[in-house]
Image (cartoon, rainbow, N blue to C red; front, side, top):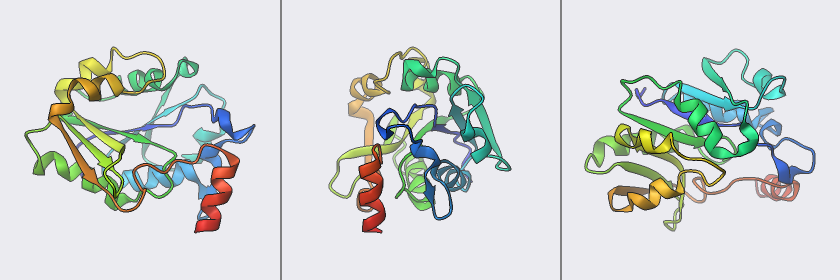
Length: 197
C-alpha cells in the first residue's frame, strides 16, 4: 500500500451516454465505478468525487473503505471535482494521484506502477500513465508542491495547464495496450468494448 491518496473523479454527468450512466455500467457483474474503486483501494486510500445526492453512484460504493466527497457544483466540470476532493487530502500527503473512474482496462497493477514511479523517478514532479505507444493518459500523480496550483483550476479542462507548465518535470510511464487512454463515453463505445472482450 502507498500513502499517496487516490482521487477518483466520478462526478461527471455521462452526457454522451444518452440517458445512461457510464459509471454504473456492469463490468464483471458490478458497476464500473465500484470495480475501479476496488482496484484503486489495493494501492492506496481513495477519495471519490461524486455528484450531489441522491445519486446511485453512492450505493455503488457501499461497503468499500472509500471517502466520498460530494461535489455540489459538479456541473462546472472536472476541476470542481478536483478542488472538492483535494480538500479531503491531508497536509502530510507527499503526492496525490488523479484517477478517472471510466478506464475499464486499467488494472491495480497499472495504478501501482504509476505510484512506484514516484520513487524510481524522484527528480520529477508529475508521473503519468501512457499507452503502449507513449500517448499520455491516466492515472496522473502530482507532487505535493503542485497542489496549490491544482486548487486554483476552474472549468472542465482538467489539469492541462499544470501539466503544460511543468512538462520538463514530467515522467511518462507506458502501460500495456490502451489501459491508460481507453475510456468509454458513448453507448457505441461500450458495445465495441464488450465485443472486443
